[in-house]
Length: 378
Image (cartoon, rainbow, N blue to C red; front, side):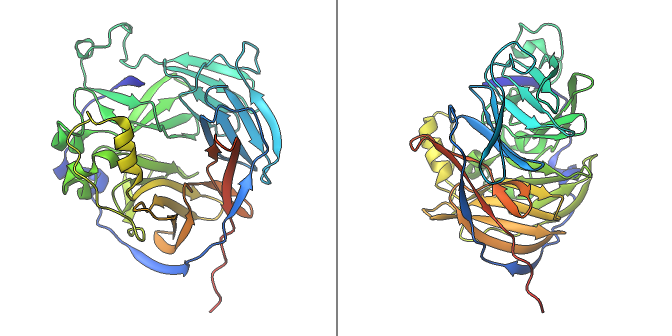
């Protein structure tokens, strides 16, 4: 489902400050192999339509249909169950969850497709809710372009990516109103935004960030149609770490989105033979099959406790493994094989954890974890 977010156009390729720095890529690889364990989570009722992650000292799963939050110990044992559909303070009226994230200071935010935001405190009791009219006006019944004085951004409902910092929420934005990657490629590459900000205190939208695409997308751009999204994480100090799906570099920005660094290396054995994609008319299953058969970067996670930045990537090409890069202060210190479907989610000492993998056929949930080896002594 699509929702609308109004915003001004910004910048252009020639003057885009988001990509002003030249790459400074250094490799000092310490680790090339890690031992990855499979962690089976206690069985719970679930629709298998989930979000998951790591928060403080626990793992969590949010069932987007049941509106239930399951919290697990780092061993995979169920700690407790929170929320669920209902009208009590410890329940939620959100309906189907569109996006969610754990909040700084505890608690959770749930967002539904109608534009409602529900905030729960550290005890998972109702705290606040608010509605954002995506066109920024009172004429919410009008959804055509004539209702808006400014260009409008679509916010894509699938594969949304949410992060919190202080009283702000950040999520991915995928499409530009009136334009699309295929039919208006050059304009889209120059002007599309990728990250939006929501102010929980003001109950409204804040900034749009991450305008434009890196230089690599201007070379045969229609071969990257299916790989036009980004992943990002935010460090405790407010720095953004950004990675585009079809670009080998990682970009670091301060909280005002001034570029601080550009670094990175291509993943190993990635199938980058992207097909030219000229139309969205092909069935979704065909597009999905093509996407999942290629290599691309699909997650970044900065771990403040250890100062390591992880970037997950799919290899594609029939590979039986995926890949995981590890950077310390912009230096590549590891590039290792991980199980298919592995995307880095977070850290609970002494393990690093992946996002949860739903296995509906096997009626189970599982994730991966590993310990990062110490650097060899000289």
